[in-house]
Length: 408
Image (cartoon, rainbow, N blue to C red; front, side, top):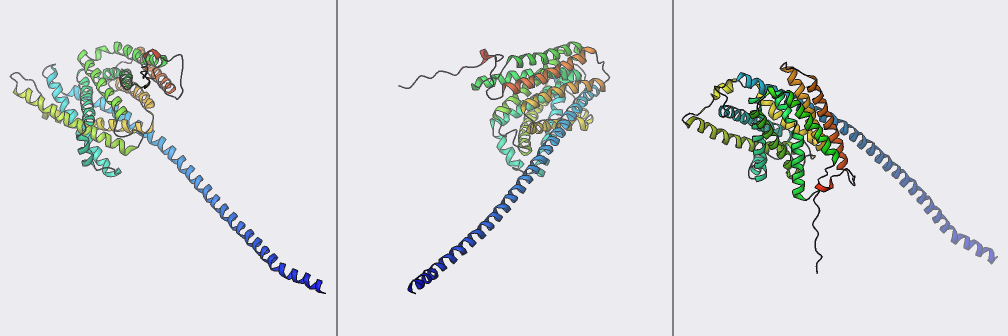
């Protein structure tokens, strides 16, 4: 009897433990179900967010491609229209002599007005896209020696380009401009050598550049009757100034070229404003000298203004701005290829526009320039890839690092 009672007592003592354990198991299972449900919901939300991000990235990528194409087309079209307008201006503007001074005065005034339009356009765009205030940006940029140097290079380079049109046809100037990739490669190597960086110069790069230069020489021989030596000198000077500006801008720029439209717009505004200041001072000096000299030659500025067209003063800042905008979407190597393509397309269009003869040599030279541009892009992209090493590398031109003596 007592044994039975003991068993019942033990059973009654264990029963609450079993009940609690069962309840705990039930609660644990319920919590696991809740956690599993929560985890599932979180996973579904993460998947949804991932799919949304993928969709945004897909749309963003394709939007960037569309914007890059649109920017490139505007760059090409406005540059070609600017070249045509400059030749029309040269043909409409009559000069009393072939002297450089009156042509220089007229084109300094035109170039300054182009820069003024560029500043106004950039300020208007900044009012839309936002960012740092224009006045603050110009005040800070005006005190920077680097920004002033870039502005001077941009201003005088643009002036030299415009002066090239005063002594030669648009097609002639475009042919001279085909030498710019070689000039840019030269300046780029000089800066890298100065900084002690690898040149990334291969035999393929040199040969592809030789194709571009050879095609330019061939085109120049065919079109030499469309320009003069002084026009060629101005066009070459323009290329040297502009390519040096681009190289130093790319190397020491205060706004990253891949950081977006706003930064490119800021950089364009500061550079163009400083170019405007330099050209205003230059024009005032020319104006004073030509009108105070005993036999000074000058032009009537009213005649220059009367020949102004929208293409003459607006397309120059437009194509310069969209050249920078295109650089925010593509690599600098691709930008260089696009620049060569722009020159070739501009050459052919100006020949057709002004009804100039297109000979088989011109077509072969234009095709060779495009081939050289594509080849150059491939070679530069390969040589700049990490770990690239080849027997084609011109190691003899590389600067070797200095050997440092071990500390005692």
